[in-house]
Length: 197
Image 1 (tube, rainbow, N blue to C red):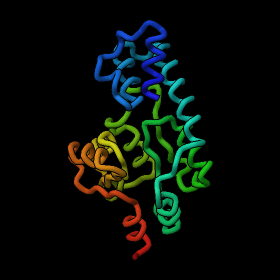
Image 2 (cartoon, rainbow, N blue to C red):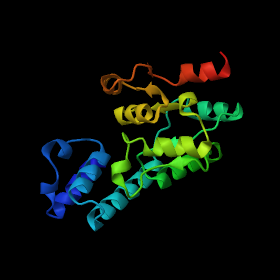
Image 3 (cartoon, one colour):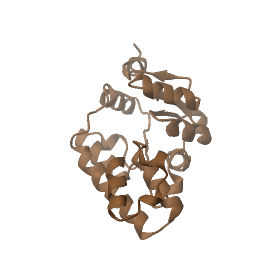
């Protein structure tokens, strides 16, 4: 998706908006942020964000679920734990994915995602704070599971406990370098713990 954004900007003659590091960054949010920094609240940013949302929605149909995530979500919900989504993706995408997986009732209405205010993307704690406040939760008794450095940084800024999920060594290194110290390579031990096993 990031490559598509860069290509589209170049087709518009706007390749100069991006520094070299951003052009090669695989995170499409980096491209979106970079353009927003240069042209905040512009039609260009609105167009780029909508194009990203469109691509995210297309990706929902082929998104491969994280192993044990569905069972963990259902088990936690069954025990009375309240869940929320705090994502840098469009909330429309989160709703679509959760609906397709039959999990929407486990989260609704607590789905907080990207807004037009792109400076509020994680690592800013905005969406994490919104989720905690909407549920009336105590941040110190709240857990966020995330797989990016920005997830960890947002959780830390919100005063929320953090569990890193790293499906490979690269992800683990990124989380560790950001400061996360509790990192699992699989959600299976978390599911076992919730089940009391």
